[in-house]
Length: 95
Image 1 (cartoon, rainbow, N blue to C red):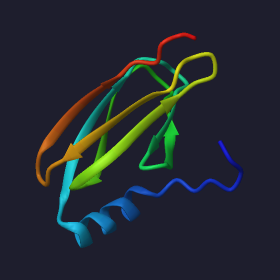
Image 2 (tube, rainbow, N blue to C red):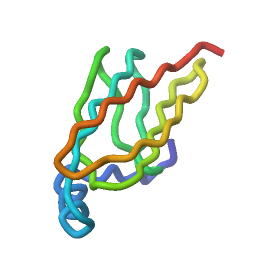
Image 3 (cartoon, helix red, strand yellow):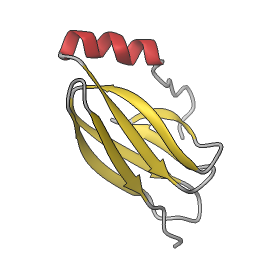
């Protein structure tokens, strides 16, 4: 993680989504506590508990990355459709 990183707020994501054609929902399943999650290269947050989290994103293509020291980075591209729900599983495997 680099210093000065700015994680866009949900309001910023939603404002961008309104300009770009709508919002969709991503249900992100990551089962490694402490994983650092990036969406489209922007720091989204750190998972504090195991399980699923729901993210509202602008319709379109997005890249999701999850990192944790001692694990291989998990990355996946996803297409979000406006007014639809998409589910994604990311597994961080030990090195």
